[in-house]
Image 1 (cartoon, rainbow, N blue to C red):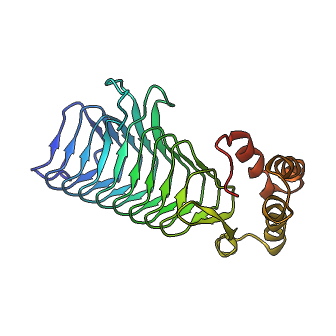
Image 2 (cartoon, rainbow, N blue to C red):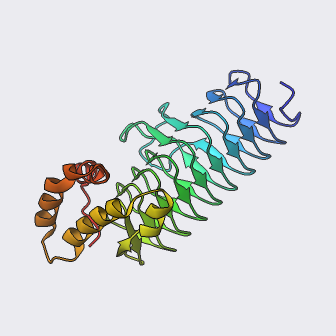
Length: 258
């Protein structure tokens, strides 16, 4: 395998496609699987039961597949699964799952994950997300497709951030963030809709208007959370862009930022 630097240490049991590139002094463990055309930089450590898909770019000093930072962990063969076409920058740390969670940490496809990002055990990341520098997720967090996390955003364990949502710089997410909503503040509060992001992704004016109507039900009409939730669920089938609220409210258990 001519694309592996001679100083890299690759366990003989690791399964690497012949097109994988690995830089100097990187270490790959026995239970690692890496798909074609993935590029690993220098000084990267990939350990644990870790599966990495195709065409990923992993930059120097990343640590992927290390044991979860959970005192209950007892060496079980939990997993880290990374999809295709992801960019993973310097000093990122992704841990494997736990048996008290879903057993694996999952990252989807086409995600842009910047330096110093931490993904704890049992997190589930969708597709097309952007995590700015130093964003950190505690365990069991779920991030929907197209989410953007601002730099230094912190997300409490078991929180859900819905599709197309966005957090501001240094947001502290302690409850769930509904789809399309922008969250800001040390104890994050709703700060409007991610309307510009929706326009850039091709949402029509009518679709954005439908989403704004849901936002007003949740945040502008003085309804209790249960009243707003019931009304939103009743309208969720009226347009395709509103269907995500059914999935979100079904899964939400920590409460929603208000």
